[in-house]
Length: 75
Image (cartoon, rainbow, N blue to C red):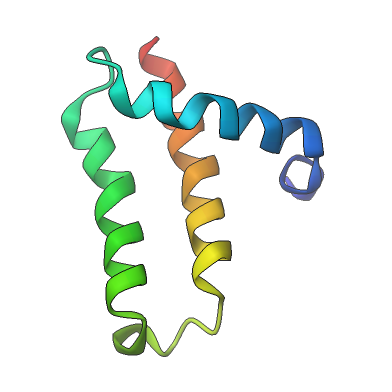
């Protein structure tokens, strides 16, 4: 797992695929919400989530990786 998270090749794939996956009509809206809502919530209200001492960018990157893996199942 850590090898994949630290792989520059994997992150290149995630950055290339995130926007097309979010725009794809084949990816269910529910899956898109599972990515967008936590990211927006964490960026808008980080003070409400004090128990996670992680930077906003790190949370967004982890959720991007998770969403890309889930959404590619629909393609």
